[in-house]
Amino acid sequence: MLKLKKSSELATAQAQGKAVVALESTIITHGMPYPQNLETARQVEDDIRAEGAVPATMAVIDGTLHAGLEPAELEALAQAKDVAKLSRADFAACMARGGTGATTVAATMIAARLAGIEVFATGGIGGVHRGAEESFDISADLSELAQTAVTVVAAGAKAILDIPKTLEVLETNGVPVIAYGQDELPAFWSRSSGLAAPLSMQTAEEIAAAHRMRAALGLPGGQLVANPVPEADEIPRAEIEPIITQALSEAEAQGVTAKQVTPFLLQRIFELTEGRSLATNIALVRNNARLAAWIARALS
Ligand code: PSU
Image (cartoon, rainbow, N blue to C red):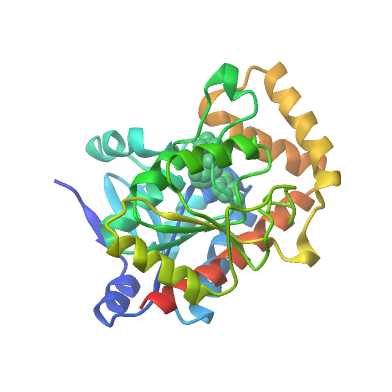
């Protein structure tokens, strides 16, 4: 039997028809170091509340899927070691054996749909890794966007990836990629990617209307909203790119593969930028949370 536990805050909000936003937990366990991960998780939840919506951070704890974490649960997860990083493939196995795991973008979309939540905020989605023509390393986040009807607000795909190939896969799978407030696709730490976004929208209402229209058309799958990091917090592309290149060559030299690649790269880039990449990551997640709250309000 599926055990799904909604926080009282989420259950009350849904009973009252209030706006709700899902949040993932892999960013907490694998994306940021302690204690910034915990501070950010709390801050992002408060940002959503400040915009008049209710947050629900997703995680599997001892075999139960939690939609919305209590403060003590969030704190324990942020400090836990060796937590599984759950995607579509290992989600069920973890729950069936009573395990604990953090949800990636893919798993959070599945959890959000189960909990009746249509909007989800994260930092950057996974995508096609550089060198994928050899490694075949493509995040399950992309196929999830193709099949689960949740609107995901991110600052684009993480710039450690091959962004043109990521866009191609999204296009093949019929996933709308919507840049918010600009024509260019943002690239996580940077506002610019050098690539035009397939779609561009200026308001949360437009994004909500497109979400509704997809449902009316009976289209499966979600939307990716690419929200540029605020100007004051960005690391320009010319500055971050050599650092990404260095981190990638170190990952290759050390034989890092599969699920370890993204956490390894984020950690190395954090060290090489002396913490600046983390400050930017925190700023962009908060910015995405606010936009997600506006979209959720437009939907509610
Ligand atoms: N956004 C961030 N930091 C992260 C992630 C997103 O700012 O660490 C996580 C998400 O959970 C996403 C995962 O699903 O990184 C991608 O991992 P992979 O490339 O292994 O699919």
